[in-house]
Structures are given as structure tokens and as C-alpha cells.
Length: 139
Image 1 (cartoon, rainbow, N blue to C red):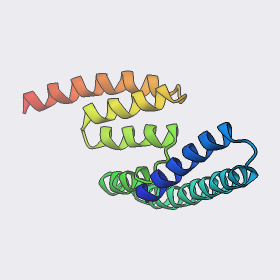
Image 2 (cartoon, one colour; image 1 turned 180 degrees about the vertical axis):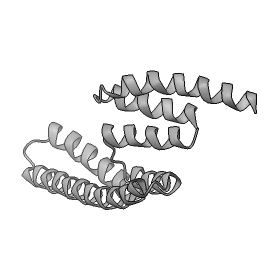
Image 3 (cartoon, rainbow, N blue to C red; image 1 turned 180 degrees about the horizontal axis):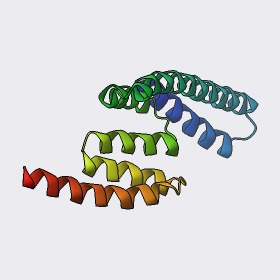
């Protein structure tokens, strides 16, 4: 899939460059439009695949199977799509599994991409991490 996308991108760039210097060739402009349409269709197809896998991931999340959720979340991310709320929920799952380092990373990602509630979750995660480490030392 990556090879197809890369070859499509190279085609678009080369056609754009050629059409820029030789505008009297309308065929290249038509090919450029076709390549852009193909790119759009590939993008929509990837989005559908992402949404399907994400839906499956949330089935696991709602059951409380956070490892299953994270497995399917990883598969969903391989499509190239993501969403800030999805990153936030990955952070919650990591936190439930006591993997605070990855949880904080996901919260930062969600916050950076506009999900501002993730800031409070990040701060609370740091507190939870300290308490968990303290309780672990007492055992």
C-alpha cells in the first residue's frame, strides 16, 4: 500500500512540475486531476478501514479488555489515520494497565491535537503514577 501511495505521489509531483513548465499540454493537467482523484479515493478507503478497526477496538475497551483495545488501536493507527479522542482513550487504557509512561505520551498527543481535556488527565496520571509506585514499594 505504501509503494502504491509513493508511486502515486511521485507521479503527481512530476506531472505538476511538467505541466507548470509546459502548460500547452492539457493532457498532463487531466492526468494530474485523475491522480488527485485517485489519492482522494485511497484516503477515503483508508478512513473507512480505520473507522472499522476503531469500532472493533472500542468493543474491547467497553468490555474492560484494555490489552485487546490497544492491540486493535495499533492496527487502526497503521492505516495512517488517528483522532485526538482515540489518543486520549489509548492513554486511559495504558493508565489502567499501569504503563504510565505510554499513558502520558498519549495524553500529550491528544492535547497537542486539540483535545484539551487530556491536560487534566495527564496531570492526574502523574499523581496516580506516584501513588502506584509508593504502594508498590510498600509491598
